[in-house]
Length: 217
Figure 1: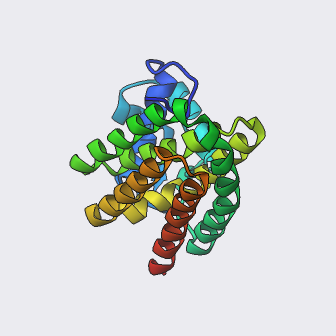
Figure 2: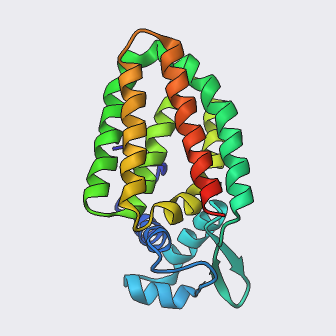
């Protein structure tokens, strides 16, 4: 299963990052909470250096805000910003979906694997894992278009939406089930031979996501 990080999975910095991101997305640390390097280092059982590295990465993703002499403040999200991000995703993903369809032979097995991971995370009620698997599912479609600039822009958009998606799905297996059903429709369309059916399935799913955001107001 591909992840968004290129760092070695076993490094101390990676382990600190993985734990802290999981804790934020799972609401162990909630919006407004202050995380100090010392507290986090004690909880994970490692030195402050990899913890500092992890917090810097999480700040770049918008999940925390670093405050000198205070620590890292866990971010809250704005529904308006989440909706803006989703609307930007509509523009980008509709375009890349049409380009990706021609590469469906290579894309399908990867997308199937990501879909299985979302279902596994749903069974275990793993919100952080589900959020990551959902992100990978969409990144695979965008990446299959073969445009590195668009892939980079897309990752920036998804980083800004990560916390919002996690909050929407946390404790809501009904919403996880609905998202999985939406993804299943995208997969079925990709197995066909009509590009317009596939791009419509992607667009319909994004419109569903926007509707979900509006419900949370």
